Length: 281
Image (cartoon, rainbow, N blue to C red; front, side, top):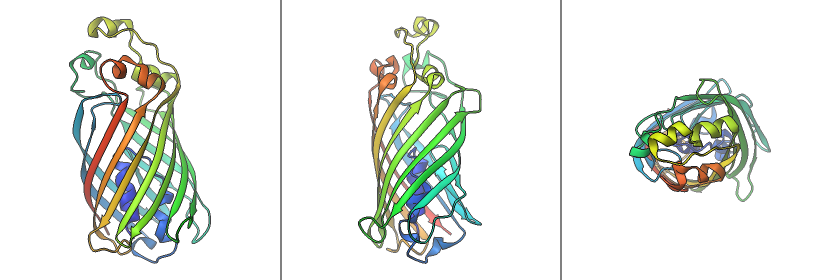
């Protein structure tokens, strides 16, 4: 089945939907994705030019997802995650693996002349463990509720700190050919993360006119996303072509909201939309 593709599409635009959500039907139906498979896709997203911005841009959404010899390969926003624990045919499932992604916040033109004066940031490469638990068949034979957490460290030398991404996700088919996924997510960053992305140093204040700001650790955002996936032949279980539509809202919190990058130059309210197509082999 193609639930994996639709969930992966949400991941590709920045939502860490856990791998367990893809099993909403695969635990009960023998379909295209019951063994090894590969899903590829491409789409377009529309969202803030940086986290906290009120300038919106269009960006590409690539997708690669699959399974090889029992190891699930799942997208993350800007990266991938590997899950080494296969889920049982029925009952509670567990996720344990490693995740990695590239963070591109303010590594390019932000479409804000004042924020651009602060200088471009380095690309962060984040790697760490991902863990989770999933509960299938709650309201119907094909749904799944999943709790997951990624704990990631910057190993690329950008902010040199740590982030924690908790998430709750509920997936259910609305029909044999349509999937819905609702997710609630948040992000916590340590002091090094917050300082790198939210602080304004005296030197930066001098060149930009923004006030000096010292950021500390804490939750910097929380949000919700709704994904609808539509199978083009009306059957989620047999592979082939599909399309997805996604909408989301994120609220900047703590110093992610208080930083002049958001409070003066941007907005704490962040909206996201995406559409795309894909194919499962």
